[in-house]
Length: 279
Image (cartoon, rainbow, N blue to C red):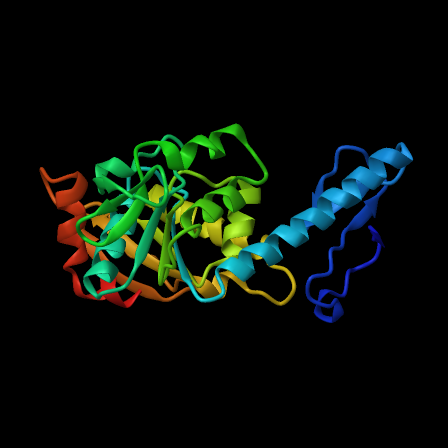
């Protein structure tokens, strides 16, 4: 633990080492993405807070372990209504068509995997449906039920269920509408690629800028989250939308709005677009 007046030398702290600040003001939980513990409180409370920081570090190591041979691709947006879920489902379909074993995990609050995937339930794992495309997913709302309870172990529980009986080449996570700092921090640390989806509208461009600023504040241990991010335009309407000028991340490509199409059919159409398979 470091005094809050000290700048933590993160570049020299060994991996798998938990650390944080001891602060002088009550109510301050974080400083530059690093946990803060109020020093003037009951010793037992300080001890419990230190244990919490330590267990969070252990959980990150656990996620790295079970995902050692699996590529994780996360689709996210701070903007609603730009088709993040459809883009994630489309990518899963495309990779399954490339003969990859894919698990699609819908972590959107109140999200429903059945909008895009359906099939017979796995004989080995209850609640996992095997779509004919080759994509596995939890049935219905099961994916988001744990997360809605704000359980700190939610991500670990979900991944344990995914990998209990099957090895996957890629884990595709739909995080649309779920920007909980704890969840995003855990996932972004393990992710190989983070696909940010926007429609290029004025509000969409503004939210992307603020997203990038927020991500920079979370970056720790020389692990640049922003280096994993790519930008994808979806539901782009040239009449009302514009591309972001000099974005700080690579642009994968753009998709116009498909009228009168939704769900699985929409995901299948998007999956046929060239750049989707190159994310």
